[in-house]
Length: 595
Image: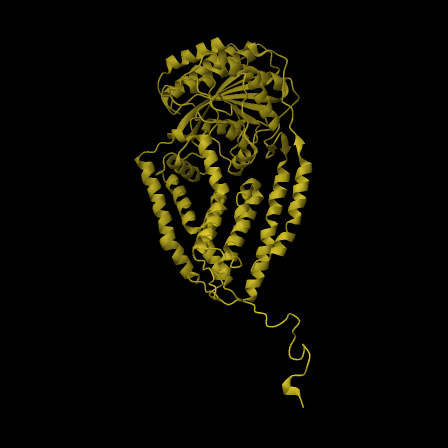
């Protein structure tokens, strides 16, 4: 059924794409440095500010609460005293970890030279109580504002205190929308004082395809190395690939990057927020605060940067451009495409029921589509109360009775889709029992239908995100060979190969679980909330539903395989020598023709 020769020939463009990718590698841009000493950041004064804020707001600072409102007024008052410019309070309504709330962002702007300005962001709310470590970002922001008031920074610089950073990022999304033009850089401050550190200290992951500009990331990493005295940590190429394939982050640089702003997070606890009640360490705010000031000094004296987020990949000290990745992934789809079209033509000549098998392959996605759609409906009518349009840190996700009931209801809808909707669709389409032409064919129509459906979905993913399409590359290459009747594999081997091809998808879950600090239960609810709240667009979860539906179909085909017995006849039997062409071809005269 499959032609290995055609498969090998189709790999010629892949080799050419690899050659192009090798020549497209570039050197990483140098970090932006400065000769100014960042000792103007007074860590003792910043620590005193943090202690004073913690005494005035000792317990809860939930987004939109009365304490959050009072803290916003306190910050606005301090900024009015120190920043020689305008201080505004942006009031709006946004989705938070407590549902829809009235929120306030405090924005202080110190005018400077014309051109793109610098932006410093810190959120002040927290999901837990006594979250002093999370409040350290606000104290560092106030100290940086005092330093900026002395005139050493020439560019326009804006300081933003947001609400909603504990989950949903309503404040950051609002300010990303309000920013006029592209900023020179957006520096998001996270935890800068806790005793427990977690690398990487510099995070450039986006909520959309791409990541923070590499030069900006390297600039902040170099500043951390200079002031903190240790390496900031950088994600490996595989981690970058997986994070861009499924772009989700639980820190505030994500909304700014999604809006096209060059943003990066600086945090001692990495991407995750610090735990409520996390202990502090003396001197840590000084070191991280001076690292932030060193970044601002370097960018202030550099040419207009204002680089947009890029989908480039850092690979062993080199930069692989995003267009090269797209080319390589696209060419990797060609071999299974040509082989699938050839197999389709062969089966059409054999009058296989390809239409019925196509419906059968697509029907596997029905339960996934129904579950996703039901989750969106639950959020729309308020039965999933916490479903903002942006990620929520797993620690802030409340797994109460309502969440458990909603999740169980979604699972029941999935079961209903598999047990009722899928068979009904197959019966209505006349595809409930696609016939096979021979007992040894092992359902070749199903193999081609699943393979081509997966290939079409991978092509659709490739148009929007080549990194996501690459996750399906092993499946589109391996599944046809694991399921074809040309290879006499036992059921268990075929099923094992089919499941192994899904390893990249499992790896995405493992990498995100490690980055976000979540187990299987919270992880399942985390992704459910992302679908329900709309962070994962409809088109994305529809395509991924097709992928998982095809995976189910491939597993079913593997389980239905029948290994041919030794007494099964071969399809082609050669009688006599290859040169035999009929009576008389081997010499002599047939007896019936003798006279």
